[in-house]
Image (cartoon, rainbow, N blue to C red; front, side):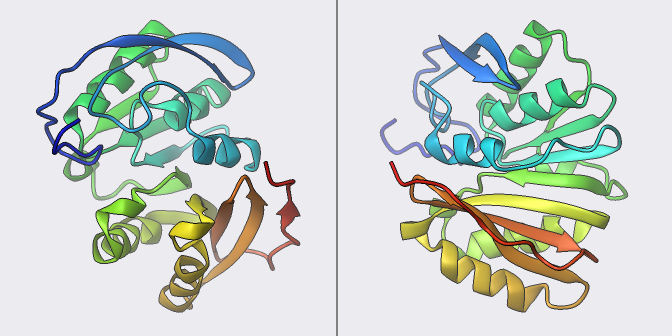
Length: 215
């Protein structure tokens, strides 16, 4: 990708559209990806851990995939909750175009692929699912989470997957300190070197973490 990053707004690298076979929501699918987006050749390990260790999404309301890439999380939410509205949010215009292509190919009309500023300010989310862009840097990542986590509806959860050696434990501590009022934060699962962090707004006490074997 040269100097491109998957969080570039408009990647300068060649689009290089490609077809990939993936399994989402228990369905074997063939979807479109491209260069200049995160993990264009497969569903990355972190996203797989997240999808394997989160409950079924709410059946209705507004659901958010923050940092959607080409769309594996957003498409899973849309397939599992066809009556919900799924917001696939990213700064990468190419990624958003891929989400739209893939949603159309799957006949999903409940996916809104949008830039952050294009999500109406009054929308609150029944769940947030995210493999956040850790490599943007701590300051930018914290700002991103401070912007979106407060938009959780009451008694709703954000689920974040973070690689252990990229600071998942320090991020958990920061989340607990930053969202100390009205939220609970805990590690919900571990696996393949990743942590799944659950941030619940006005939630019940955390349950014990699920320990998965390391690969």
